[in-house]
Image (cartoon, rainbow, N blue to C red):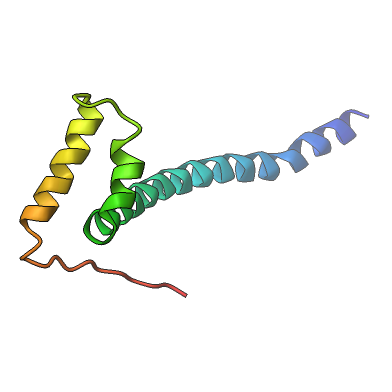
Length: 97
């Protein structure tokens, strides 16, 4: 019975090590995903502001009160984009299949 218990414990060691590796991998992947999501949100925001200003106003300006920090930040972004509209900005899009 003691030998069986020892073998049972020793058999679980690789599973425990793999579980720890999986947890670390998942945390790392979640961080990378969050960074990619933020980049994608910035690109969508830029496209909406340049191509569809009414939709941009509906999504990024209307939900906030005038004078609030987010409202001012989004309004400044829209104004800055309008001022530089003569200078066309290139958006790099990479597709991975």
